[in-house]
Image (cartoon, rainbow, N blue to C red; front, side, top):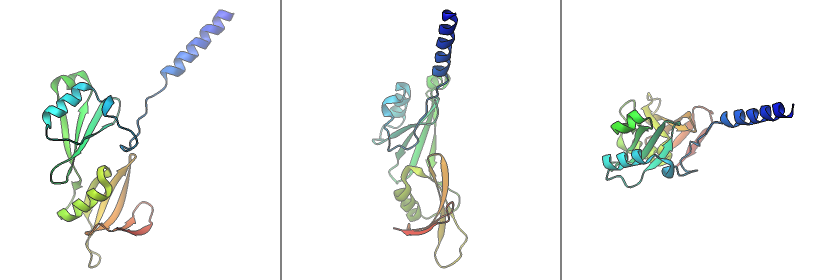
Length: 170
């Protein structure tokens, strides 16, 4: 009887340990993941983008990593890599430039949004004119959740569409 009880206890412990899942934090400022990036991905990135000096690495899932850096003209670029052997042998990754501009957006607005929201910035869309001031919807992704913020051309934030709070920030 003791052997059956001990065997059941060992199996339960093994099951609980195998059911645990690795979780990742999504805020780049909390942890530096650069030491955990597979060497082949880092080598491929450095060979493809030798002029990039400051890069932030973040895991998306157990199989995907992305590197974020800024270009000379102050645009955010993300390069995505898969850790599966097929993709790593090919050395392939794909690149996405942010922010997504859904309409014409002046460079000053893009620069203000990038300086205000950094790597969390996703897209900018011009609103239909309602007054004398041009307004823009700025989509920001924080911790996997998107927020739409209304901003003018000078970078002044008027309100957060999700919470309804009206604030004027500089």
